[in-house]
Amino acid sequence: MSRRVRGGCKGVLRPGMADTGNKDLIRAAGAVVWRPGQAGPDIALVHRPRYDDWSFPKGKCERDEHVLVTAVREVMEETGLRVALGRRLTPSVYQSGGGVKRASYWAARCVGSDGFVPSHEVDEVQWMPAAQARDRLSYERDVAVLDEFSSGPVRTVPLVLLRHAAAGRKSDWARNRAAAGDRVGAADLARPLDACGLAEANILAGLLASYGKCQVISSAAERCVATVQPYAAAMGVPVQVEPGLTVTGEPVSDADLLTAGARTGQRSASSRPASLAEQGARLTASLATSAEPTLICAHRENLPGLIEAAFGALGARPPQAEPLGKAEFWVLQSADGALVSEERHDPVK
Image (cartoon, rainbow, N blue to C red; front, side, top):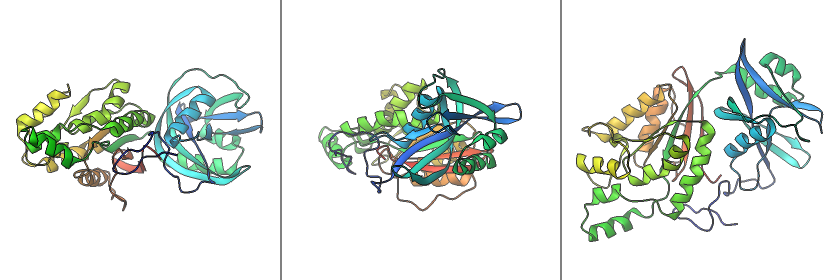
């Protein structure tokens, strides 16, 4: 099976292609779907006639399918409901007929419905208060998932911190542009996504849509803007270019930054500050507590500082982890200015 190789792109790029580490594990995903009720959230449960049980909408990951896509797809297929994923819940790991199953769950706000169609897999969907749902559930493992859901904030706000997709080798691009007479800093701003990066950007559009509509804020670099453009187009939102999120190979002028924003057809933010890194950290901290769903796209060099600023603003410390790879992202879910969950994703896992 072809799969992505760090630092390059080999074969056909599809989400979910990376090795999960346990080839015998059955991967599944679903959600605790909720909507506002008269006395708290109402929960959607499904009845499966084959087992005559009540559970949350969930199902197995298809071949090469990312768990985020599985969760949203299974909810839609079993209930007809459209959802936006919120905080991640503890997965259920249990013995199934075909082996060990790991079911990943999220709290998921119902944002619309395409209509429920009964099938041989699910013949009934019922909305009920959480206490009633707890009594109706057929399995203790599902009760544990619901108890975790009920123990934390129901509505949360996502902040996504994304590293741009693959854009070839910086040294090769700089050498070619220098030979053409371009300044190094300005040339690096214009470095585009390569074929692998364009494929990653399209995959990201689907994964990021799992969290609903976010405002999109990007470095002025072409490779960053192009990474989030498919998602922004799908959501019908503009890409807001921020100089404070921008990293270049050498100092660049205000004119170069403004030109980069104009080249992408998007507006650029306020004038360049004395320290782009400081401005980027302040901006990220502000956005983390703004209660507005936000996607930020930036660079390997400045993302550690942005991640630290975001966690710090939400009263937490970043976990010890390897730096984000190209097209990887963190999702921080918060409520009332405090961090309630964090998760990290690779578009091909």
